[in-house]
Length: 373
Image (cartoon, rainbow, N blue to C red; front, side, top):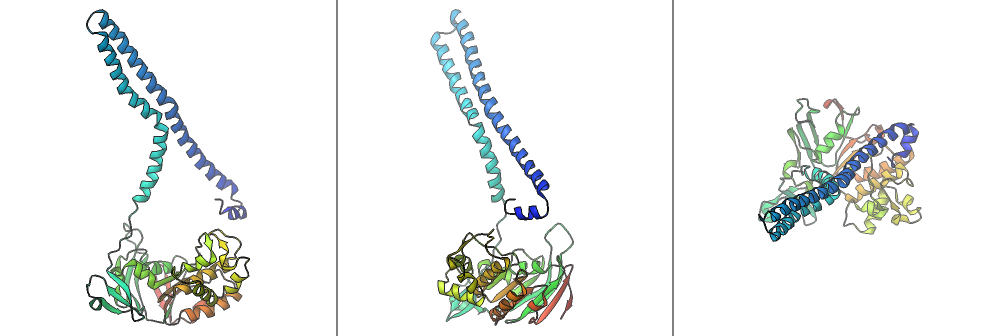
C-alpha cells in the first residue's frame, strides 16, 4: 500500500484502500484478542484447578488421618504427587500466548515449504571447450563422448499446446509452431492475453508444456538443465526489477563474474553510460525497486545494459522498449540491433519500429497463430 500511494491518490481510492486496511487490522485484532484471552483466562483457571485439587486432597487426607486409615506422611506424599502433576499444566498455560503466535507463524512457514519445487530432470549442461560453448550430456563419463553439438541457439517450437489450469479442458495455447535459426528475429504481436508472453515463459521453462515440444539445437528443453537453459536465454521484461544496491551491481546481475570494465562497456552499448555518469555517485549510486529518482526509461535502459552484459545466445524482449520515449528508443534500437547480431531473438511488441527487422511476424489471437508474415 505504501509503495502504491501515488496510484491510490491519483485514482481517489483512499476510502477503498482504507476499508481493506481496516479489515486486515480487525482480523489481526481478533487474533490478538484470542491470544490475550488464552493467556489471561487459561493460566489462572489452571492455577485455581491446581489449588482446588490440593485442597481436596488435604481435606480428604485429613479425615483419613483422623480415622487412622492413612498416615500423615502418606498424605504429604500424595499432595506432592498432585503438585508434580499439575505444575506442568500450569507451565503450559503460562506459555499459551507464545504457543499461539508460534502456531500462526508455523502455518505461514509450512505454507511456503509446501510449495512444490521446480522439477529439473535434465542431464544436458553447457561446457566450454577451445573458446566454444557445447551442449554436453553429463550422464557420459568421457567428455568427448558427452559433447552433443555446439550451442547455436536454433529454436523450434512444434505443435505446442498449453494450459495453466490442468483440470480445465480448454488450452490457452493451441498448435503453436515456430522455427527460428541463429541470428533470426521473430516477432510476436497480438492483443493483450493472446499468449505472447506465455510462449516466452515456456521457452524459459517456467511452466511445463502439455503437448508438443520446444527444442534448442535439436535438444528437447526438458532434457536441458534449467540453469544451463537460462544461461542461454536473456529476457528483458516490460516491468524492470531493480535490487536495493548500486547501479553497478544491478547491471552486474546479467553476469555476476563480470569486471567493472565489462559493466561500463555494457552500459555504453545500451546508451545509459552518460545518464549514469551524470548522477552524483555515478555507477555507485544506490537504487531500489521503488526508486523514484530515475525515470522509467532510465530504469529500462539499465535492464537492457544487464541483458547486453549477459551476452546470451537467445534474447527475449518482452515489450522491452515500451517505457522508453521515441528519442531514447532511437538510441536504444541501434544498440539492440548490435546486440542481436548472431543471436536468436524473440520480440513481443506493439511498436512497428521494434519489429521492423524481424524475419517473421507472427500474429496471435486467443492462443492461436492466425497469420504469419
